Image 1 (cartoon, helix red, strand yellow):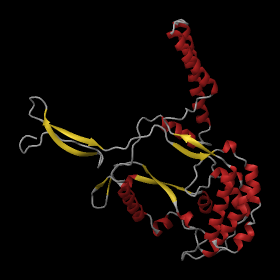
Image 2 (cartoon, one colour):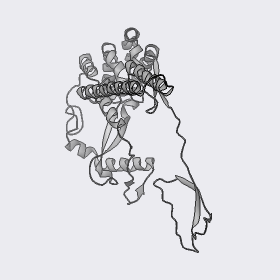
Image 3 (cartoon, rainbow, N blue to C red):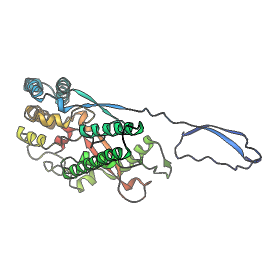
Image 4 (tube, rainbow, N blue to C red):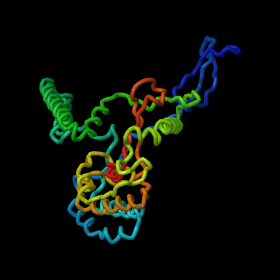
Amino acid sequence: MRGSNTLDLLFVNREGLVGDVKVGGRLGQSDHEMLDFSVLVEALSGVSRTATLDFQRADFNLCRTMVERVPWEVVLESVGAQEGREYFKETVLKVQDLTIPMSWKMSRWARRPGWMNRDLWLELGNKRKAYGLWKSGQATYEDYRYVVKLCREKIRKAKAQLELSLATKAKENSKCFYKHINSKRKARENLHPLLDTEGNLVTKDRDKAEVLNAFFASVFNSKTSSSLGTQPSALDRDGEQNMPCVIHDKIVLDLLRKLDAYKSMGQDGLHPRVLRELVDEVAKPLSVIFWQSWLSGDVPVDWKLANVMPIFKKGQKDDPGSYRLSVSPWCPERLWNE
């Protein structure tokens, strides 16, 4: 500050990032005053762990036996679609907890890279030993350089083999392919600030979600969905059913076999890999639940929920119309939509 004039400014790209701004004394003979401020950030822990299902140690034979012993027809006959869905979810989750152990997945900075195996781990140990011998004078520099060159060559081949394997199986396991691609990115961008209907720029995540929700709710309605051909063929122009719907066990069985086992589980905790392993056992109860939902018009609450992710398409990043929605419904909902 110089009198009433502002000479030094402090810019931030996020609200609440800086606090306790104070004007201090002058530095030496300069006529500028110093600014004292605090950066308000959370300390990141060195290692974060996430619990995940360990399918390598799973006992799927016991899992099938336990699910097969459940009297599905007797239980589901006297309940509605919502109650049947809750009973199905609780039963499968209980069997899943008993037959599939949990493992801890480390954070990005703590877990081993995908190309690391036991041979390379031992080779890196030999490299450290060779370095210690060279520093202590028990080995020559040429011996140490030979071990380093050999270790680098094996690591290079392991990385190339990993990338070749991911590229070959990209269509079957696209999740691991894009996970490897994203791990090579140095920076991750959050959703750009958006303009609301009044022209104000919103920066908070909740406000961004409300802006996108309002925009897509105004674009997609009953008329647009009918014009896009999304109206069920079993309904006439008045929205009434004009032909009987038949849900066979074989139809549900075929849809279960098409589930992508590499996809992540939804918030209900049912993993696609588990349903793929239990196709013969869960096809019947799911078909009964689908049939009850169709007859009563009662859709379970879980089937109305999904994980929605906005993806930038083209245009201005602050325009909500420049984004499209990527919807990831839960496993039973995917079957019901198909």
